Length: 386
Image 1 (cartoon, rainbow, N blue to C red):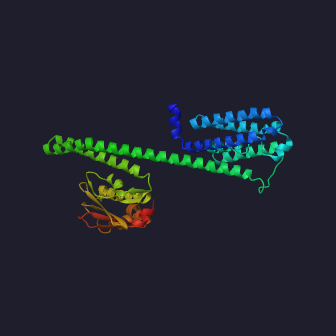
Image 2: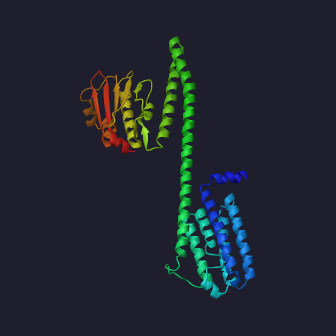
């Protein structure tokens, strides 16, 4: 019992099934009045009452099955279609041909619409419309005529409209439910990630920072342990930043700060705004890659003891990232010489990247005074470049 109730609570089409059973009840009331009114005119009145009892019994079984949930299966819906078609076919047995031609089928057309509604909820608009056609084909067959004069017989259109409308409603309900479930899973994953990040930050990172600090204060052999602790602390911080970046890529934009935090190390210092710097995912990735290229150049050419400093400025209509180092600088004409030798790393990986984003990249350097890159991306490009 509890399991069935739990399944019903997770079924997004439950409200439609409930509404369908209200329609079923009303159609049974109408069928009862119709039976009382026309039974004396039937060729076999006693058989009519027996079949009507079958109609009421099957309607009650369907209502219970669909409301409780165990009947919301293809096999049960197909069984309903078969039962209704058989009851409609009995029209040729319980009535006379003249009566059948002048009246609606013995189980009323209204009651015979129930399988159309059930099939629409279970199978969607295609299943609902197909069932409506089956019901109408049976109706025409037992009457022994085919009337396509929609001005006098619009029942076919009504059946098709019911199947399509209810089927589309069921599809929309399932799609909305799936999207809501996915959003809930993403929210839960984000909350769990934040919880783990807090635990790592409050626990392991702070302990490593304390070990590094005390080790450097003690000096001697413990300084090596302090350096290892510092290295692991930075690795953990980069890992936390990278998991945040992976999560942010689920959206249309990404916070540039999250990407750049992965670049922080003992030789790279970051100065980031206190508020998010949202960019389109592609723009953010390209700008981050350009920063990475500039930092690689610092490692390769600025000297073994050179440090780099990254500054991010959100100017509203543009985002500017400055990468400055205190290395040996670049000799005059060195870039032109590298380009003439076919080494186009700077022009393609940095300048080319920014140009493709509608931005700019400028390099300032003097021998012995380090180098400074200024990378600028227009805010309009950043917002729509994802």
